[in-house]
Amino acid sequence: MDSQNHAAPPPPRSTLKLEAIPDLVQRLRAGERRAIAAAVTELEKLSASAPPLLEALQPYLGKALVVGFTGPPGAGKSTLVNAVIAHVRSLGGTVGVIAVDPSSPISGGAILGDRIRMTAALDDDGVFVRSLASRGYLGGLSPAAVRVIDALDAAGFDLVLLETVGTGQSEMDVAEVADVRVVISAPGLGDDIQAMKSGLLEIADILVVNKGDREGAELTLQQLLGALSIRSMRSHIPVLKTTATTGDGVPELVKTMKEVGSRGGAAGPMARRRRRARYLIARAAADIVARRVKEDVGREIDGLADDVLSGRVSPDVAASKLLSR
Image (cartoon, rainbow, N blue to C red; front, side, top):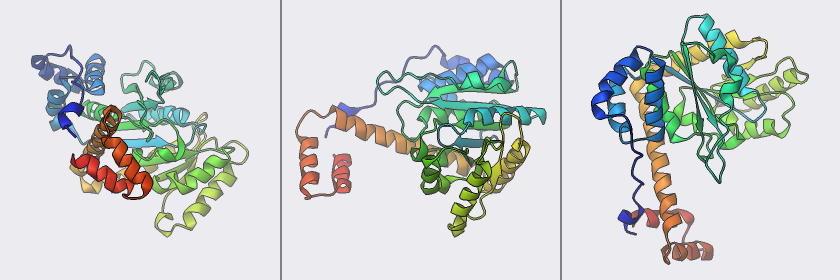
């Protein structure tokens, strides 16, 4: 297969001139919101200016603690993130938030409604919130989120909160991106607890039962403790109960996030950033393969598909042949 016929589309044009990047970075480092927003926009859309901008940010990266919030829909992730923001700000810390909303599979657009629920971020220069569309990535993240982490890290935010779309077991990408993974549940979610036990439970650094004032919260907590007890390698995972609307349990959650983050930070910031880079490479490779399959109008893909259907080759072998051409 001719790789030139399947090249990635050219990057979007940028209004940011190369000679303006040093000044933009200086203003971003000073906490200027317009500069932070401009940098985030360039990195989100991966414009022509994004690579030199990322290079200019390199000396300032690796200090922020990146915490991913994930879990089934209805668990109250956005409300809990809002409560965490309020508590961290009361302690004098600064917070950057990346809220990933689900995209339309047809238009690619998203509601981007998380900022509406994050009232703690209103009129506060110590908080910066950006909503991103998931762009169809079933893992709950888009690669743009990883680049935006760098912008918020370089801007000096102490904590970067990453809230994913909430699609159950498919939300495993956060495990590759966040330094600390917080998996949130709530009473009354029914089968979603079972999905958590078999999927999200495996990536959690901290488990949270939110809406702790509701009936069944204690039962949900015990279910999660029971699920952990049969996984000997996971029995040390903290299980907390919070009520985001009142702030109950939020100080303990923030304390635990910092403790887990400090343990994981022993590997150093470069190791954490390399893990995120590997995620970007894997996503780019998957996009290339998907583009090749979609754009193929000859018999090559059909031939491989027939070989898989007949049992002559396995899907893995077919994929390897596709990648080698």
